[in-house]
Image 1 (cartoon, rainbow, N blue to C red):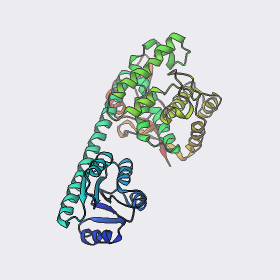
Image 2 (tube, helix red, strand yellow; image 1 turned 60 degrees about the vertical axis):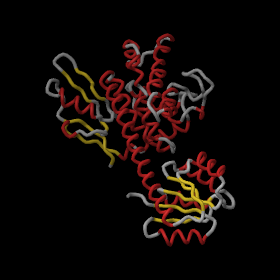
Image 3 (cartoon, rainbow, N blue to C red; image 1 turned 90 degrees about the vertical axis):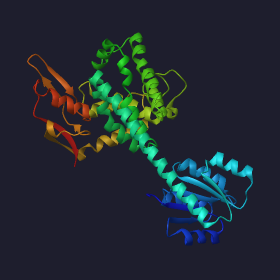
Image 4 (cartoon, rainbow, N blue to C red; image 1 turned 180 degrees about the vertical axis):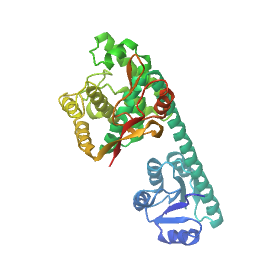
Amino acid sequence: MGNKKILFVDDDERILTSFERTLGGDYEVSIATGAEQGIEMLGAKGPFAVVVSDLKMPGMNGMDFLIKVHQQHPQTVRIMLTGYAELETAITAINKGQIFRFLTKPVENETLINVLDSAIQQYSLILAEKELTEKTLRGSVKMLCEILALLRPEVFGRTSRIIPYVRQLAKALNDEDPWLTETAALLSSIGYIAVPDQILARINKNRELSAEEFNLFCGHVDVAKKLIANIPRLEKAAEIIAYQEKRYDGMGYPADQVRENIIPLGARILRVVLDFDKLKGTSVSEGEAYKKLKNMRGVHDPSIISALGRIMGSAAKYHMRDISVEKLEEGMILGEDVFMSNNEKTIKVMSKGEEVSSVAITYLKKYRGNLKIKNSVTIIESL
């Protein structure tokens, strides 16, 4: 039945010993004498499928303990066990701690086993629903990215280039929601579908925008936020996207009082990597682009600039090799630009540092016969 780990928490060691003796053969039983030890056990031996807690305990009572379990381990199923059967207590516990069952002492062994089996089944259902939701979210994100790749391939190329930096920075800065930050980065440019072509052309050539053009351009943030906010559980990603153009000193878009560390960490990371990629697009080296970032006072979070410097310092741990187009795999990082050409002109279809997507692979294989392209491409690999 999968995870059958159960944690019993009570201040009466005799009761805990009894649970361990009678249920140890059918379940993976752990015991804790009090809420504080229970919290330690959850971190050291979790995840637990079920937590069964007594209500009346010295220090933190069972209700507060199970509320904390719900906050820190929302998938774990919670059961309250007590010798006090007050209706008001039961209702409060169920509502605040989202208790699965409320049992009174003494509880018959058969009744307890039936409840534990139901709780484990509930835990399995919760995990299955979580996995399905995550797959649905990943599918939605992938679909939106592929739409962007088809409608704005030059913009999607930039998105692919920044993702490796976003991942490394999120890890280096102990981001609590690295998946949300990466998702926000992937979808940060989805609003570009509403930006006029002439403005995008000026941006791609690193030309300065007029005040009116800049206001039109910043509208992409609002478009992206509204699109992403409609997807359940991506509200925080939408917030990151909303502040991607915000300066660390509080200036920029949107014009509000949010500044410095109040700006979502993911948005601060995005601002750094987007500006870094833009600077590299002006044909300067990575080192020169980094120096220019450091000199842009008030624009970026200094801690993220420092982390980016450390990441660049570890670049020597990678090497490049050539592989055939047929052997390209999703997730590989390009070490050089990829060009296609017909008899009239040469087109850069992918850029150095870009992460190879399934759409890109399909595109290269499909048009390789019509356009001239080298039989191999250069990728970056870790040593």
